[in-house]
Length: 134
Image 1 (cartoon, helix red, strand yellow):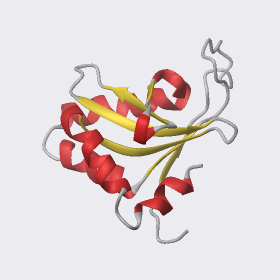
Image 2 (cartoon, one colour; image 1 turned 45 degrees about the vertical axis):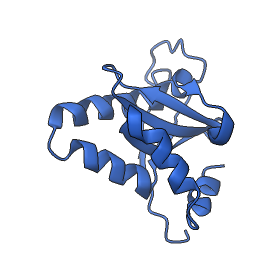
Image 3 (cartoon, one colour; image 1 turned 135 degrees about the vertical axis):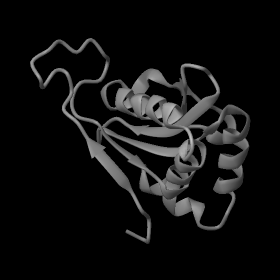
């Protein structure tokens, strides 16, 4: 797929397990992370397992309730941002509800994530990553 590395995880929803799912979206959501997002995750968690577990927990929550992130506007229109419990980190992702798919584009500290993502979007090969999730 154009040299893009995707890391996909698929889980059963609570509804499929026989429990009541009170979220807006029911069904299985797959979560993929772009190479840029994977590098961000590695950069901030390579020495801190506590932060890694917290962010992995947020990614797990996205599988069941992907609409929980804040809708972004301006140059990141169509994306969502999910903040960590301590509010220091953000996961920026795009939701494709008809395909039951979440594409994570960036994971970083709050103070860096939006400028880094904006810079990355303006590079010549970022278009193939962002279009792949539509």
